[in-house]
Length: 95
Ligand SMILES: [Zn+2]
Image: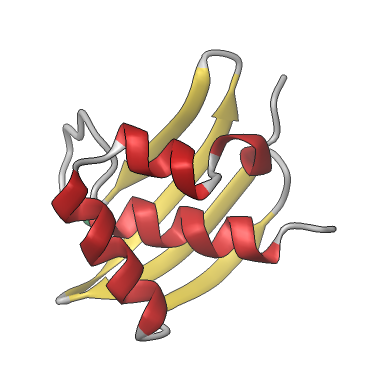
């Protein structure tokens, strides 16, 4: 089982997301729009503010990164909120 931290490197997030969502996600991080609620190697929960405040959950699954966001019930690619939370999780991972 991978950990979240193996799945949310900036290049991995960039390849999963679209260029525009990735860029917007980085802006959310730059504006300090991410508030972590739960932070662990298998599961990260956080609020992300990009426009509206959204709840994001990231999970490490055997087949890769599993994510949900309250901005859409059917995400096929990481939205800007998922990107933002992923980038913060990557930055805060235990070294
Ligand atoms: Zn979202």
